Image 1 (cartoon, rainbow, N blue to C red):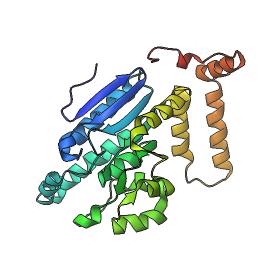
Image 2: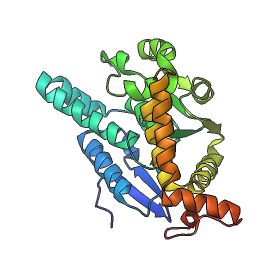
Image 3: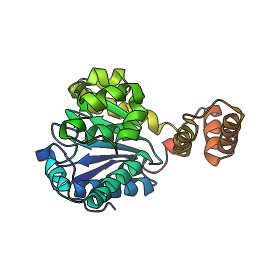
Image 4: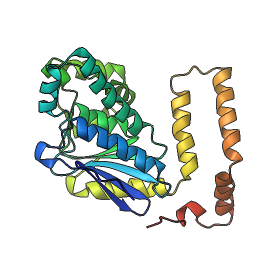
Amino acid sequence: MSATYTHLQIERRGPLATLWMNRPEVFNAFDEQLIDELAAACAELDADAGVRVVVLAGRGRHFSAGADLNWMQRAAARSEADNLADARRFAAMLQTLAGLSKPTIARVQGAALGGGTGLAAACDMAVAADDAVFSTSEVKFGIIPAVISPYVLRAIGPRQALRYFQTAERIAAAEAKAIGLVHEVVPAERLDDAVGRLADALLAGGPLAQGAAKALIAAIAGRPLDAATAEETAQRIARQRTTEEAREGFAAFLQKRPPAWMAGPGKP
């Protein structure tokens, strides 16, 4: 049973859950309440064994215009300590989203600006409509994209970030794909089809293996190609091979049948 949210809606279809930001009148800009609700909803979906894939989306014409300017104006009048508490809340929400044990897909249309770009980058995958536009626009307001920076840097790398963090240029969908910010760009009318195809591909994989794959990337990314890294990877695959899920996966392949996770509870 989902909690009740003011600025969010959770739409469930079997093992696929879509987390809709629902402030279309302000282009899904976020304030303290939406940040808290996103964190709570991500934790709720991560704990729900019936959910295999989480899609983050925005109602209306735009994915998210980033921070609510009224919220930012209030923050500018507060103390540094109050602003630190606000920033920590936002950082914790992004960490919860990025750290989900199951795959996450950003479904992006229209504007994904500032923190909206950060939300897309914090998801494992991003699919954008061809009308989508991104920007790390913070310097235009005299601030910096600090809290979203780990996720945007993970997506586009420091060289591209040196440009876009300082210029605040708008990044069209095609360019966002070219620099690694999104994985796929499709015509706006095919956005849901593209997200659905990606979700279907994810549902074919073992859920525990996918969580282990996310943990593997977090553990190995940026490490040197040395004996310690080789040993880490050997231990991880050895542990995974001995799981019930791995045994079922190999048995299903040899017996030419779908694995249990494709036919279990929550299958659409």
